[in-house]
Image (cartoon, rainbow, N blue to C red; front, side):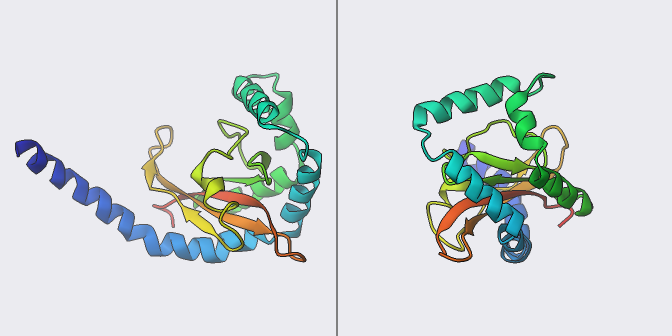
Length: 187
């Protein structure tokens, strides 16, 4: 019984903190992230990568992800550089910078969960095994997912990831997803 008594008070601040930002995060998803998901450059880059990666199997995806992970923090990082140096990644970086601290990261994923473009280096290349992709791309048009609020160890800021399914404007078919890291203290 003592253990239950000690644990419950610790949970209440976390629950109320998360609930404090639920409405604002949902509004951010339905306005800002939805607009980013409909951007013509985002859509065209996803369509191009979907064609390029259409023949990749899971073994090849895992090899690419392992290659990416081995390049994180390295000076010679050709796979990471190929993504970060794209025009769309530069556009996403500018959006992040213009957010005045609200956005901590932006990355776009294809129909396999692979990174298409990003504002900063992610820890992995394949997001297909994570909720940010599974709860959007696999769910369908207009699907969104808001992650738990967590404290980022490096910045000491409380953040959530808001993800949204990206659809082809002509067919309506989901072609990828976008994730935006949000500093909830600035939201």
